[in-house]
Image 1 (spheres, rainbow, N blue to C red):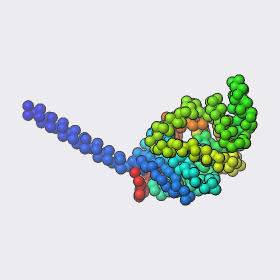
Image 2: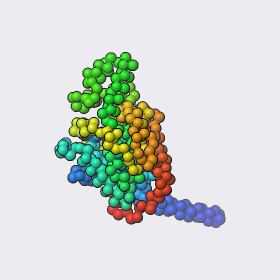
Image 3: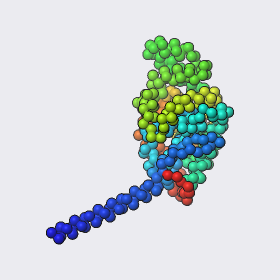
Image 4: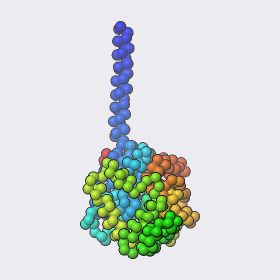
Length: 363
């Protein structure tokens, strides 16, 4: 009996030690992680960022969302859980968008150069806060305009740039998108759709966002903007977001409409064939095989003339314009195993050497 009691005591002691070790490990892991939703000031305007990662010594991945005015933050629970194991993932609701919406934002500040200035200020803030020389940057759609300009002007800030749904020549892209949608409507025998498209006419559309919206709705109907998800899914994803309040959700489309109406004319002037033919960082274009919202064929053509230390198209076979939401697991896998790991291997980088002393990191 005594022998049995000694064995029970011994096993109980082992379990206590094991439990204590797990508790210590959990505390250490908590100290290394970050989960912070913050209001900051960029260019004199209050704006919001979300910072999440399991280890603050991991490299930074900053996401520039699309639109203008269509934030990624309310969808991060869909496409970022695995990324947070390998990166410090930073989502930014840009000036006038999402959580950063204000009906009183000065209209004169809603322009490309101001957004690029905000972006540069944010990157500098992150570099200082996490003691990094460089970050990884991904830009989606409109965000790819900000992203490619940033990579071109400030390669010293970046390990690599990822353009997802990369804008190349905005006017030509809109024309390709319009003609493709019209062709699909005719093939489907959809007379009402054909009449609607012929009524608004080819881009640049007159009548503001309403006519662009008509084309976009029909583009989605024929599978040129998304696959595996629908427009209603965006609302479902947002409703499930832990980072958006009811007011944020109510303001989302209001902010989007304001941003588009103030900035669309300037967006249509973007032509990287004329403005950016060399980028001095590795460039990856995450491209959906069926993307006709920002047509993939322009990305293929642009790749052939762009000079960069490394450049490639990373194809998404079952995606159109939002691979991160249409194929979230594939998207995360490619960011981790192609962009991160191959970049580090190619340039023999040890990112841990960058991290000297972390001061003022809010968790």
